Length: 536
Image (cartoon, rainbow, N blue to C red; front, side):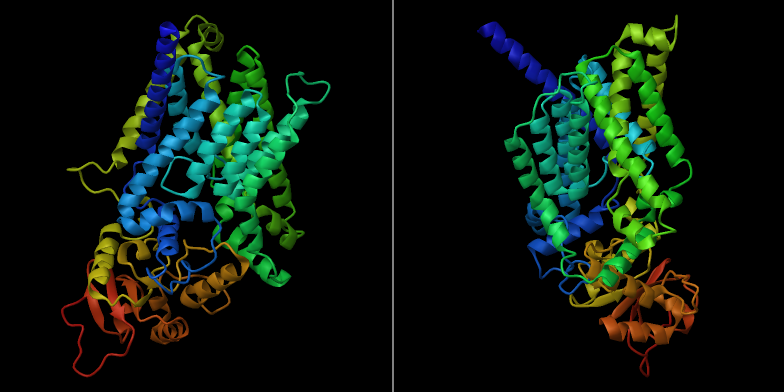
């Protein structure tokens, strides 16, 4: 009994160490200054849900929710501590969730503990550099990070042949993030059905109906509210919303013809390398199951690609389908399979010999150098005390230091009920100021009616009315009359304008604050005696 107890404790200790080391690897890639790309979206909405008085009247924050489980879970935290603190707490929890799920997925595929940590490091690299559609797992505090952690745990159940629990775990993921979990459920089901074909290995257990019902019920908690967002909306509004979503706002994730150069090639290369390594390794039931599931994910992506080819011929139907992120699952599962298979190859001396005959050490040294280089590169963005400040990724399209200064001044000096016109590239205004804004390009709603309204606000604030469809960086570029028009329509009382905005010097609005990048304006005419003297 004592020997068995000690062995169990030793195994648990190794598992905990592997999880903590994997989480540290993920933290190395994800430890950017706050807020990260989507944190300014998710955590502000979560805070507003828990405290509706915060930024009351903000257009985006008051649109219907598509990730209710996440907002319910993180709303109280976001409303009770500073948003930066909430983000770091959420990040740590997210990294741990992904680490737990990833380890559970690869245990049947990678035996040694050291190789599992290497697999986590390879996954960190692969999931950042091989996605075709720009999907990410290791990042800020947002719903899909936790959903991916649960999906990876479901993948671990699936490769063990436990399809029922895998289906239910992916149902939990769908409750957290309907797209992430929903596609995983489809892939698990497709792989299971394919594996039960007479020509396939007969190692696929039957799935009781109770498991299927439980997984579907769990998924319904996230999917049904999302489907309800389009309930009762007329077809024209849905079509306009889909165009705004797929073509205008998120084409870089949804439309293959707009994907960044090289991403598709890298993704295809990752598939080829994974498959070659898979063929090098001894066949096992777990590896066969993984291949079926990754194949199902790639098949989903291929289906999305064929749908995208129909967009010029049937744009309304194609966009209605493309909004469901057909490429997201393959982006992550290919990276996971590549990392696990590569680590298993490195742990197998015979497999290394097949990769580099006579020089089995060479693949291991090459991977060690790659991972060391990646760690050094990622350390450049860690917010370490004493080093020059690194801009958060959410502020990539503004002058970060000047933007933060202008927002801090607004937070400290402008009435709480003020409403702002902000530059088109800004994404952190509510986060930094606790004030509402008319519209932000980054903050696109999820329901059709709000999406159409979002697109209308974008056009009103930034579109040049010459039929070209061009958008400017600031409403100020369009002149004082346009600013008054927009302010009157949407209740704006103030504006933050880039200092290099064309025509800024002609605007007849009082300047309340300025720095080397932005000026804060009050949106009413200059009165006698007021002067912007001393301000640029």
